[in-house]
Amino acid sequence: MDEQFKYLPVEEETEPADVDFWPELTRGAKYVVLALLRSRKVWVAAGGLATTVAAHFFSVPAEIWMAIDAFGLALIGAIAWEDAAEKR
Image (cartoon, rainbow, N blue to C red; front, side, top):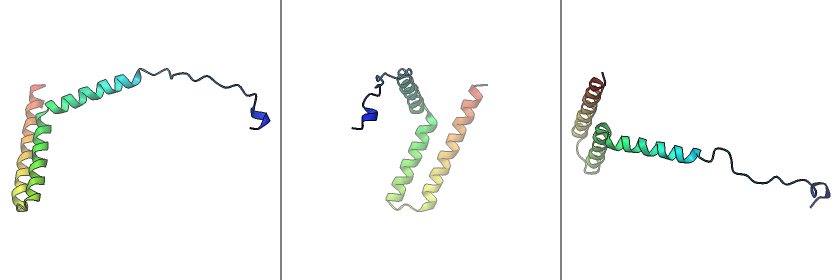
């Protein structure tokens, strides 16, 4: 070890002041995830994704699974319209 660094003071390790920041972040994320799981639009989108993947896996013609996706999008739009009307 070099002589010039031998007598330098060593700073004590302290915890940062914002230690409580992380529990707030995870608590907020929990509410976001729970809100998403309660959303009908998310479940319709997940169902549409599952049917699209299954249709592609089972070699269903593209017109059929595209029609199912279009129906899912229309349903999501109708649910969004209904939710917006309730909040007025």
